[in-house]
Image (cartoon, rainbow, N blue to C red; front, side):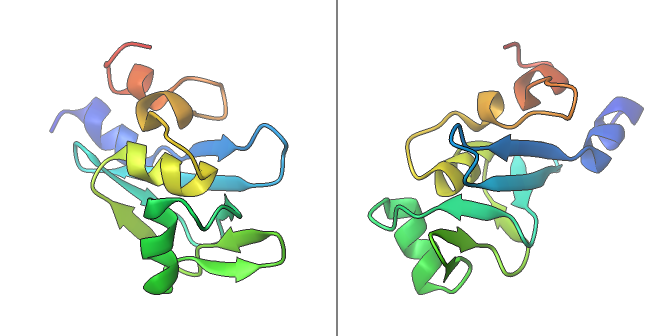
Length: 112
């Protein structure tokens, strides 16, 4: 791994829903995996397949109108992490962003 790749492992990426109802943060793990950090919230859309699996395993728990990750949870890639948070199909390389607004894809050199 290069120094820039190691730097990316410390970078926190954010996703807030368009209605401001949910806020999540996470980190890249290695080259592909993505860790959603404990305390992150997700849209209350339990009919979404990714969320159903997380709810059954208690990796995602209901809290009012949203769901909460009670502990860190590692996804195989950033896209299912974004889908779990947003309750819809999503491209995690475009959805997760730095505080400065750079997408995860841009940060790792995958374009926009």
